[in-house]
Structure formats: C-alpha cells, structure tokens
Image (cartoon, rainbow, N blue to C red; front, side):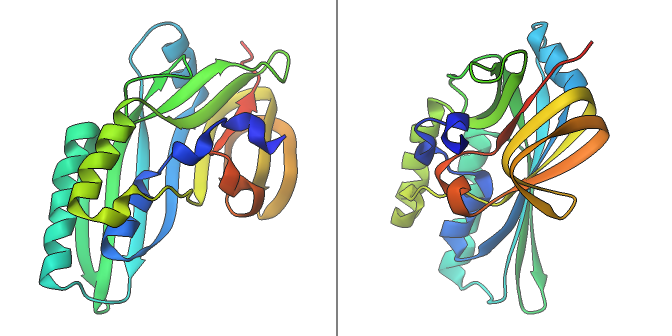
Length: 217
C-alpha cells in the first residue's frame, strides 16, 4: 500500500536533505502547504505554485570552508528552484538555516522541474486524486551541480514531512501518517477546513510524501 505513492522514489531528495548533507545539520522537517482550491486551479490549466519550507539546525558553528559551501548551495538551488528566501542565523552558538521556496503543481507524473507536486487521478482508489511531491528531469542536473560542491551531496534520502491541507472533501487517505498526534497505518477520513499530516520513518523511507483525496465540488 505504501509503495503505490511513489515508484522509484529513492530518486527524490527533499530540499532540506540537500542542505543537511552539505553542512552536517540534521534537518528538523519539511513543510508543504496545499489548498484544494489551488489543485482545482492547476487542473483547469492555470499556473499554481505551492509554498515549501525547510528549517534545520546544527549545534556546531561552521568553519570557513563549510560557510562558503552553504553560499554555493544557495546559488545552485536558485538556478534550479524558485527559492524565495535562504536565511542563515547563528543560534546558541550553532547554525539555523531556513529555506523557503515554491514548487509548481502539475497534472502529470513526469516533468522537467527539479521538484514539483504531482496531481493526477488515482489508479488505486476510484474517484480519488493522487497528490505527491516528486522529482523531475532537472533533478539529476541539480544533483550533479551539488555534488561538484561536495561529493556527499549525491546521496538520496527522505525527510520527515508535514503537509498542511486546506479545503473540504468527503474522503482523504494518507498512508503511514500521523494526524493530530495519532499514528495511522492508513489514515482514511474527511477534510473539513484544515488538516496537518506528518509522514516519516519506517516504510515511509521507501516512499515519498503524499495523500489521496476526493475533489468534491
């Protein structure tokens, strides 16, 4: 069941993991905000961008070489992604980096974008749509650029992800999700306003973050 969200998912490196491998930080979490109205707009052929945020920290200060690498990563990410803000702060003698970017919503499973949200009809759950964070064709080029900064940046990992979903739906299904501090092998409920789902660890490490939803009118 969990594997249906993302075939070949080990190719996906989330934005926070890229930075984590560079500076030796442990990423706290990736946050993605999705409004069902925006998904409908994308289905109608409009350009839609969703906010993607990563905050991660490390208790150790960076040396000069590591600090320069962080700047190089910022420059490289800006070439391949829509980075709105790349903020680095010294906190309690360590480092905190906040990356805010935007990813497009596309009605396909394949795209040129390094990262994008895929919105397609589900082939598993009748009447539902599949919503997942995916990597596209430019991801490999981004990976090569980052590897030229630091050889370790070609590693692929998944990252704890929280998705904030806004809207109304008579059915929302999320595999391996924590909802309102309760863990579910398969969350199957409704959406009435706003819902936050968190996916991480275990079988999720072999899949990508995402859910299935009925697009009620």
